[in-house]
Image (cartoon, rainbow, N blue to C red):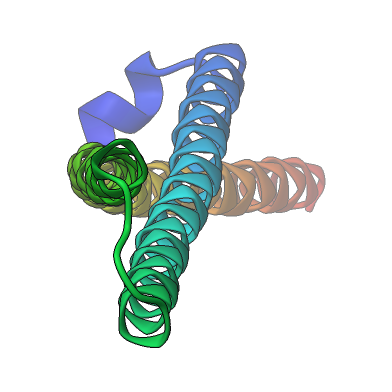
Length: 171
């Protein structure tokens, strides 16, 4: 590590730190965007589920109205009965279409959840990597400080010895 501390330049360490910070920020932005997409997909899924419930309620109320009309009245012309049957079939088709849309939205929401989990995992990997490199950088900088302190101590000792040598020669 002493050799690494001597070989690595401070400018390189600064560039690496900047690059690591940029990559971690990008991973954070990607995770945030994925979270927003997940929330939007879940909201769309909830709206689709509510649309299914609304269509089913419309179908049920339409059926009740038709059956109430059949009970209250006497004979119904065949054409009117066919119109009511077609209306009920249309209500049933609307419910099925809403269910199909809800299933599609559920699939999209599941895909968004999976993508969000993937981006969170990538962010966690980046954070681990950043911590690892930060520890290495701290170690290198610590060794540099130690080497600088030793060099200062040696210089101070050399200076003292030179003065003592000069004082000793003068005596």
